[in-house]
Image 1 (tube, rainbow, N blue to C red):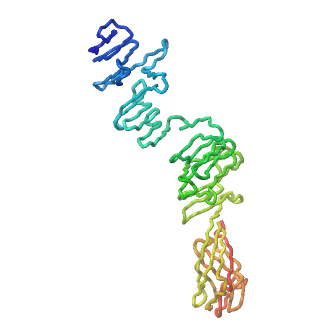
Image 2 (image 1 turned 180 degrees about the vertical axis):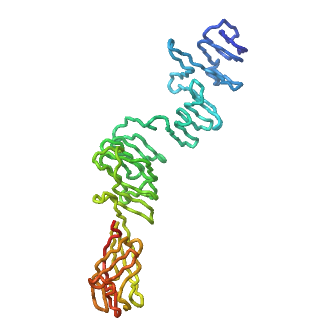
Image 3 (image 1 turned 30 degrees about the horizontal axis):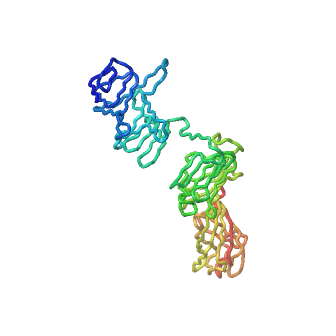
Length: 435
């Protein structure tokens, strides 16, 4: 073994002999250098035993914080550029290995650290001792691509390019530009030019099926055929379609949309062909509110605004006023938007009481169908003093019905004795408000 201490600038032989400074260092066997070795040119190092126990051709051990090996590239406009370090594997197939690195113990140290020649704090590529890492210029506002020990990958393109993250491919029609899999089963795909793929074990959910536009397709987690939830698609901005578009649901189940306390709206541009984003579209359909205060609206061309379309139905028990003892009748009602229909005395039998007043009214109209303005509606079947008669009902904004006998329009027109009330059912229709 040859051992050299101090700085050398000459050719070293394994026998220990030296010659003046040359540009080549050839070592056959083992050589130990303690200090600084400056070599201008080529270094050739080979182990003495190439068929027996594996030994490293070159081993460098650092005994301080400085790097064990520092390779500096050289180049200028006159001579061109050079790599600081190049690793060339053998040309023999199956035996051409490159670089093997064993380093790192936890997240506080690094197996690989790549930065600029200026040795600033900017980093291009890092792998930490626990296996996590990141790639791309690492600044306070640009984090590039990073991954954790559990396999989660994050792409942070906040300020990397003006368009954020771009996926550029030359995918042929019907092939996938992007795929996402769960348990090795395809669950989400972006397919080029109206293509279709089979996702999971079920019919796909797809949109974007125009003419030569990408198709975005989903499959349910565990298959839509089961009871699993498809998941959520959250959009903070707009979703624009080109051509004729559809949302397909599984046969027999349809498509379910779950809304929070916000609203779902459908909008259209006033002018056909208006480009998306160049004008504010008009809302033509809206669903909003909560389960207990749901509201559905549609655009009314004459009103040029949204009008109420909310459906509802129910029943109530009304109480006669003007008879003794009090009589109660059950009525059912239905509502669509601003229109209310009530079937008074739904049991459709003669329901009367002994009159004790020349007036006749009924209380108990629910607030949900109480009009904002009083309205008068014709009612065909009454009894007064046991005799059949027609009349009218004034539905008041306080939730009370006032009944009139005949067409006099006078409330105090009833007989203050005998039987008084409905002689069968009566269906009436009115508006919740006149606005």
